[in-house]
Length: 468
Image (cartoon, rainbow, N blue to C red; front, side):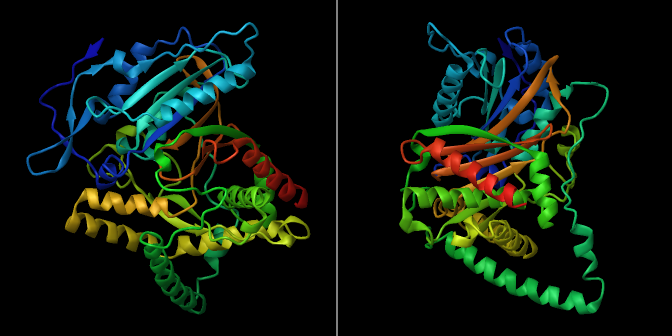
């Protein structure tokens, strides 16, 4: 079946970040998985794509082309659904249990994660997994190229396809991003005695962070460890697993330490990663390891409607509006595991807070834009590739709705996402939904033990939760 798009549609220029993520150096995609409470065999896929998905943004009906001046643009084309919709058939077994299909689903995700999307058609696919797993009666997988937009844009697109399950006429609501100490901290700088030291500290931190970021993006590589292997890992098979945490438990730790939810979960991931590294090799406790933390650069507290994001002069546009923070993973000490495990989260909190308050992110963005103008998008993409490759892991998080969602009257019990094609052995994504945090781990297959790694993350959480 084909849906013909108007030929007269004006071609939209591809954003710089969109060009970096779809280049000879990088090809990054996002897998978003929706878990349905009921079977999805009767899901009206064709009408949902035609009437809901494609109208969200012209990019879903476009391919990336290069004009005579070498500029990349989005060109509207016809959409052939048979090229974009896939229904996998899993092997049949005498005793087919949901736990068995868990393995099949994870293997299927890993397989489609390593396959690149063809450039000859719009850069997305939908996979309908009709088999029940331990978490769902069926799963809907969106595979979307990162050139289409970042996590914020694609989350907005996803939400525009869904309704609130308990009452479709009411809007979905989202947890507050503001920490319980934000207003208190803001009040510390009301006088000149607080303002001047803050400015001076910001200048110093910006200089240090920008210089370190420049080194990390050029020749300063992390040490090789049990979570970081060699070059070319973006082309190797991966393992994809998930973990679920209670948001109430995370908030309890947050309130006790007066930090943010992101600080808590990032600290737990750092702590668990060090525990895993120590279990695999006792000599790597103090290795130089860095995480790339993806930072949304929009000044927002929630999601805008897609119609607002695509307006020409909007302050929070559709696209790739994010930056990278280089955050060193704190070393593990004996006190972190015994007498003062909460100190590990405080270490992560202080370094992330300091880096967020510096202007290094904006300077790095200006540097990349200048590089693009002088050397072109392909050379800049290689720089971004090296920025990622020189680190040990990437962490990205999104805020999901507090209420349950439904797709065409199919209640969604859970969802998660993961980035693919990143030149790292370890990528971790986090999303909140209905009072839970879903942590997804994409790890290099046969190099990182996913079950042992996840158990170390859970162990770190238990140690910290018991300490609180």
